[in-house]
Image (tube, rainbow, N blue to C red):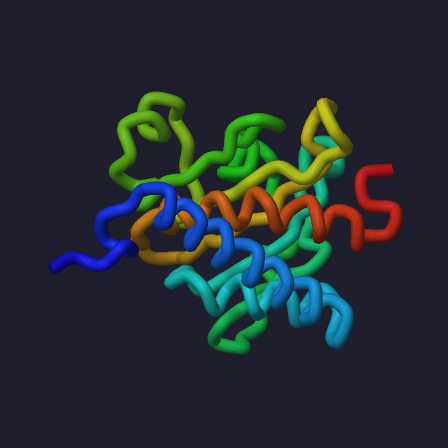
Length: 171
């Protein structure tokens, strides 16, 4: 016999929402205890991508405000990226953007995009209903699967909490 968890869609939805709420609670505690970098480390622990970052858009460049590397190495070449080379340029306020392999993705090939980043998933950081002022993203230098739908939903919810914590971000 199947349990409620396996058969009742409303129970599944409640379980997922409860999981998201718990994740946001953990994220908030990481922010309170250790700041943005601890929060990025937590976000990164939930996915397979090597990097998790917050970038701020500044004209024709995006600059890393915070950059977490799972391997603990210096990623200085990723601190400032021309917007023309950035996968974040495809993010809109209402639509995240993700790619598993930028070298073989038809959309990126059609748009003549070349990037040092191979896999990417990002959401916009912005005041409500305005142009993105930055991005919250996971990325890697090798192909990776996109985060699960639940993880994508979680990142969309987490961006609000992180945006509020970024004093003066977007001004």
